[in-house]
Image (tube, rainbow, N blue to C red):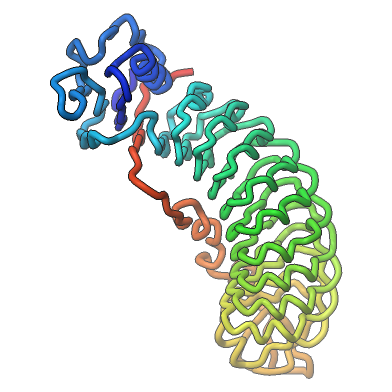
Length: 413
């Protein structure tokens, strides 16, 4: 059994307390947390026999029957649920347990009232995402990030019509992004980054008009952006670094007026930087380094007054840098133009941006290293992570939190 388990569980039945269905659900939850105990034989009547950490209370206004209101095996006791709490729980969080091992229990799909399911940062949680995940029709937020999950992204995720946040990042998921992902019309955050996904970006992504955050970086995606991308008018973050896209940059991206961060580094993009990028007035970060871009830097980029991080290094850009002295000084070391042998700087003798002078003596000294971009500017994934993504749940929720679980050295399969 785990040395320390903290579980907060709220139970209430509309009929008699601890009837067969309620009792079985309690056992299923305990089996999922620790399968080395025979909970049914050891505690056949959980509320009727001493069970350390278990609290039972009668239904409101009665002396009996009893309902489980708290299940606590942790050091710090959890507060009891209110009498009006409902079972199944509406929020379940199992995260930051690096020794937790095994597959996701298929019983999770029986928790039909779940609105928030977070199983994250548990490095040894492996296997496929349960195929029955589509049964959780009440889900608003699903976070399975930072595990060792494999297999495909289940098509049945598209049945979660009320989903607002979906984060499957930092796993080993493979295969294509399912085309039916476009059915999730309420989705505001989609993060599939750092997996082994292949193929193209489905055209149906253009249907996700509520998206504010889209991260697909560090995969094997290729091909063109979906047509109709300009429909994503609420998009603020587009993170697609390190995919073998190998196509020209689409001018359509310039119509995403709310875009704040655009990161397309290391993806084999070719051709010029679209002049339309100069229309992205809300842009604060533009990362296009390590591609095969050619042509001149669009003059419109100099009019992006909110930008504080611009990296165009290691491409094939040429011509005079169109930025004036004020722009260069404002960005300082957050501007990297190095690794573009055809670029030259026509103004400002005292600002190094990694390029030579256009007219001899005076320009950039060519010494600005690739690592000149601040570490803070490289931290977009941290800033755009689940912790910084906010959404509201209407009405009271009953919360289940399982965190800081410690397993013995031999672990559990």
